[in-house]
Image 1: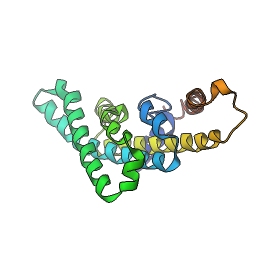
Image 2 (image 1 turned 90 degrees about the vertical axis):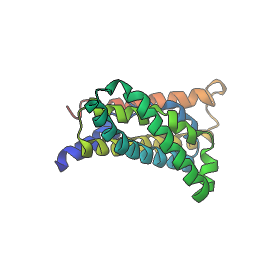
Image 3 (image 1 turned 135 degrees about the vertical axis):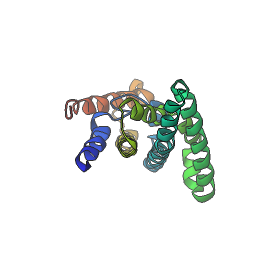
Length: 193
């Protein structure tokens, strides 16, 4: 059992990384990754929301199956995620005002971040039990944090580069960097069958 949980975590970090391999959650990934501390805070917040959302949505989905209301899955998951993000936003505003200010508009974007919804739906579609679902959510969050930290470290180094041609400065070099990182992560495909 422990081996399968470790495989789930490693596969979510490397093989099925949401922003770099599945291309989910690109907006906050590109928007917050220009500052290392903001990227770290966003990654931790997304990880927390993913795990808590999975902890809440998995049992709800089992109830929806019993009531033959599985078609309401996406709607209910979005409502649960939105409520969780609001609670986290209020908590961060009171206890971590510097991080709350640094994340700015990107914190409410977690509500519509398709990585959170994606992990909740993926857990159900993959047929995971409760512990496996929580493990996959945690692994997906760590993968998101990992991708955010890599991208933010690369972007902070790119800012100081004077030899980048003028047409490639700003957004173009960020998109090229994200594409190269994605190609690197695609090399992990086939690591687990």
